[in-house]
Image 1 (cartoon, rainbow, N blue to C red):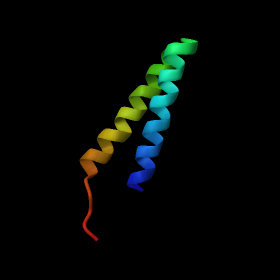
Image 2 (image 1 turned 45 degrees about the vertical axis):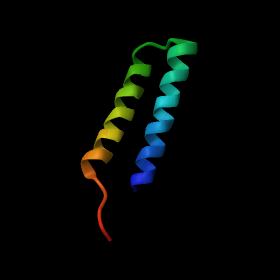
Image 3 (image 1 turned 135 degrees about the horizontal axis):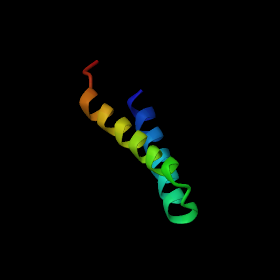
Image 4 (image 1 turned 120 degrees about the vertical axis):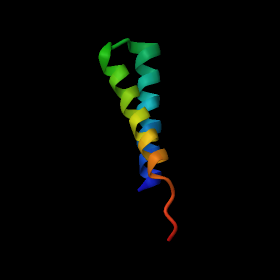
Length: 51
């Protein structure tokens, strides 16, 4: 599950970067960035669980 959060975060950051530099769609780009940061922070707070 942790790797999935990183994948989602990376996809959202890439989408934000493309939108910010190429399309300037407005608030949607910043929402993507915020979602990516939330996913990363959630993963850091969750930490690694010992099996």
